[in-house]
Image (cartoon, rainbow, N blue to C red; front, top):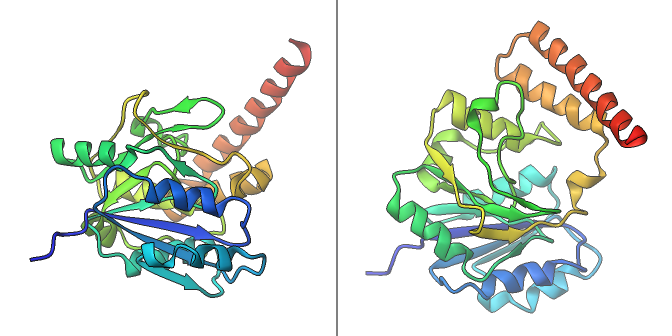
Amino acid sequence: MNKKIRFSIITVVKNDVKNIENTIKSVLNQSFKNYEYIIIDGKSNDGTVKLVKKYKSKIFKFISEKDKNLWDGINKGIKKSKGEIIFILNSGDFLLRHSLKTANKYFTKFNIDFLFGAIKKNKVYYQYEPEKIFYRLNIYPSHSGSFFIRSNKQKELGLYDTNLDYCSDYDLFYRMIIKKKMKGMSTKKNEIISKFNMYGMSSKVSFLKFYYYEMKVRFKNGQNIIYLVLLFFLKILNLFRNKAIRIFS
C-alpha cells in the first residue's frame, strides 16, 4: 500500500521569473520528504513557465492558464491536491529546511485543524490572537508561508472567495475561527517556517483599498454596519495618530 501524502504544497505565480526558482528550491530542499508540490501559473509571459519546467520531474502538478486572481489560482491547487494537509507558499516566499518537519510535529502531537507558523518579515511574527478578530482581522503571522490546514477541514470550509480581489484569506479565516470554530495554534517564535517576500502583491495595495476589502469581509460575515462605520473611523484616527508620532518624534 502506498504511503499517504502528508503535505500538499501549493504555489501560485504569475510573471515572477526573478523569485520563483528560490521558492521551488526551498520546497525541494525540505528535510521532510512526504509531500507533493503543485504550482499554478497565471499564464506568465516573462520566462516563468520555462524556468518552472526545469523542475517538472519533481513537481506533482503544474498548470499554466489564465485565472481570475490569486485566490482562483489557490483554489485550482486545492482541487488538485491529494495530501492530508494543505500549505500555501506563494512565489517569492522561502521555506526553511526543516519547516515541514516542524509542522508535522505539531499536527502529530496536537489535536488541531490548522497551524500558523512563525514567519520572518521585517521581524519575526508568530502570535496567533483569535480573541481580537472582531476588531482586527490580521490576527496571525501570515497566509502565504505560514498557514497549514487539514484537507478535510479545508473541504468543510470550502474554497477562497474569488469575488474578493484582496482579503479572501481574512474571509476564510473568519469562517474558520468564528463560524466553524476550528481548533488551531501557532508555532513558537524560534520555529520559523518561512521568509516572507516583503515586495509581493499585498505591498502594492493602498491602505484605503485594502481596508475597503476588510469591510467587505466583515459585512459578508454578518457584522453590523454601524459597528463597521465606527471601526473605519477608529482606523483612520489611528492612522493619523501614527503619522503624527513619526513626524514629531
